Amino acid sequence: TWALPYKDRASLPSTPPLAAYLLRLIHLKRSNLCLSADVTTTSELLSLAEEVGDSICLLKTHADIINDFSDRTVRELRGIARRKRFLIFEDRKFGDIGSTVQRQYTSGPLSIAKWAEITNAHLFPGPLIVTALKQAAATAIAAYNTSVQTDISVGSPIEPPSYAESSSSHANATNHVPNNTSSPDRDAFAREGCDARKHSVVSITHTISTQTEPMSPQATPSFDDSDPIPNINSPFLRGLLLLAEMSTEGNFLTGSYTSSCVEVARQHKDFVLGFIAQRSLNTQKEDNFITMTPGVSLPPPGQEGKVGGDGLGQQYNSPRSVVLEKGSDVVIVGRGILNADDRSAEAERYRQEAWTAYEARIGRRR
Ligand code: UP6
Image (cartoon, rainbow, N blue to C red):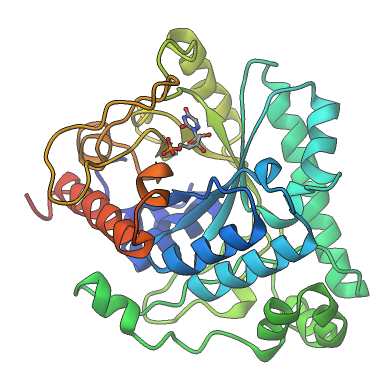
């Protein structure tokens, strides 16, 4: 499937809703770039999200390195994600026994399940780590569904992509006036945070109760180009990436360990949307996992060559080699963008590189 356009992969009947949503968002935003927002304060995180948000499909966090992480961090970040249309991926790299990871995922100061659509886990504790996180995600989804009926605030749903279809350049695509898919209630929630839900609950409850299916990982958002995704299809979804390979020198995530990740993912397709890996691991006809690749960097603008590593084990490849040669779907870039003087322009340069490589991959352009 990796040679198929993102849009076509989104519409395959077996594609689970969150994967379909992300593939669709990538297609609409013309961005297969994930920013790794490795910063240590809320204000840096929020400014970065503002600066780079238009160029990314996904923003990856390490919430545990943010000194002043709080409800405000989450509320404001979700507001920006909603406005700029990107999903949030907390790079937690879970790796403990099932009952512990459930608590780490849903409780404590980070309460990741409440605000990050995507998180990731190592498989070294054994396959039940996936079952444990899936159960915890289901609980979070149930809590969300209850909260909107009973006015207890929990998290927020993912927001629908609303960019108009465009075969023109990215600049043109983002200049389109977004289709009118927002509701005042949701805007208020994004602006004012959880408190706003108290005022908007009646309307949100109405929206949900008009659904034909309950909100669950099985609920399929509709993706019809001619009909922008309505609010009714903005579900609260959660998904997992398995760390099948790492970017670092001498790491042990190789061979049969990597293959086991793929086998386990195939058994949990409703929750595992893909992998952190250095190449596509889709080998069977029906595999449609999303591969996200960290360890991506470009030489500074105008310079040639390859960026090696960081002296602490990190190894870098170019977006072109990762997407075109290795078949990865999303490039994850941290310091390559964070250290630039103009982070917005640099993110756009990475987006273009990764998107051009994708177009070459699917045979649109060479
Ligand atoms: N990351 C890797 N390699 C992996 C898995 N995760 O680099 O195999 C994460 C790091 C960091 C980001 O935790 O947040 O991706 C890469 O940042 P960089 O682009 O600044 O090197």
